[in-house]
Length: 178
Length: 383
Figure 1 (tube, chains in turn orange, yellow):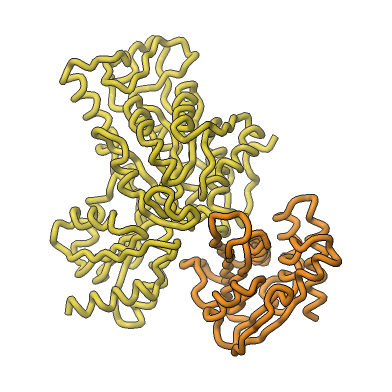
Figure 2 (figure 1 turned 135 degrees about the horizontal axis):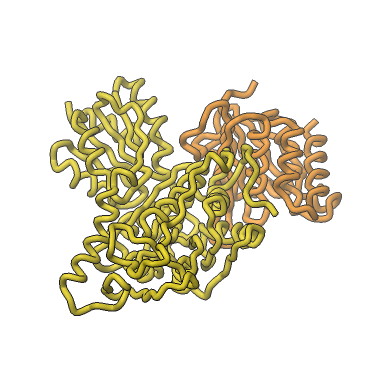
């Protein structure tokens, strides 16, 4: 059982879609009838600098909007993992894109390695869909949002051109986590 | 044609909520120059304004952006621009011009870390005094401070209503966190939203500037003979710079039309304020840490309360004087190196100790834990 208030941090490099993944997660939570706040932090560069997106999901109205200690940490780059691992709660959940994160230090957490970038590149035409795959895995593993809500949130958040591929990526992520 | 978003609950970004609210308020003209973290407002209005019979243009810089907005307002349109610190600096001259010519318009400033280009993507609250005193000469601006996506919506509508009511520029002073944050927002049905439009002159009117506290405003094309100048002017608007009385009456009226109506303009949200010993005065994103802090303090046996400022200027002096009467200490957390702190200190005039809590850099917020540490320390100092 997840606690009533869940704090999630999704981190990686600018261009990997971590902000969009956070947006979709937060929107899905609202579609599930919960409160959600999503904030972000990124550098002035459009691509390549470290980026993070934070989502707090709660049954109650949310005051402080930033994540201090996360229940769930998603990282899509080695730098991001090194930077944020200390903020993961003991026995929290860690999801890494195992094509981008080669070394995971010993940590008191449930760790899941997802081959998101490889599958996005080989099965979905582009690595830009790695975030959708991570989102699928996150949904399946944690159950903090419903699959239906995430699907609707994807449709409402991405462009018409990428909608189908994003949904496919989300489905692959769900499958990987089984 | 979609005129307004349908009634519903959304998961929306602050900047987007601001843009949607502008449309609901009746905004028909946006001019701006792209700048992080305000660009989404321009992006959204560039898409939405043409759908609602309005115009959005990108100008060559921020000086031109506010010039275009002032021109559009005189053409009869509700008009807005949006920027951040560096652009807000460039707009100061035209803010004075809008104030002097009594041009209703809305200027959105999404604060980021300055001075200069600073940390473009990081949050700060360093433009509070610039919003108050940025242009030259005597003036009183109206400045609003939202602390949620819902308030980005509500206060943008209020900014237009105040601009139209008082025939003056209004500044929505938000910050990067509130502007980029996404959260749940409910858009009320349009018949539940109060929209105010400027008072227009009667066909027989000949004077438009000094006849009454808030004179009616003609538009270009209405057929009136009007002169609009930033120089000291008489009732017709004609430049009149030699007479000390004309200047005195004009500028005092412009300042007084805001100050005398301060009670109608000032808005704040109080929490646990009755008989608390510590009062936290906060605004914008920083205020989001306060409720949790009060709960944490309660567990330590400390009775703390909060005044959250939704209007920064005119400053709510009377409110603070009244509510602070029984407090032992006032804390003022801000993401700057002391701005509203000095206003609070001036207001309570030595009757209550005021403690500043400040943090800048990297957009890092003051956390509830940090606030609690300061509260605990200050309580120990009192006892």
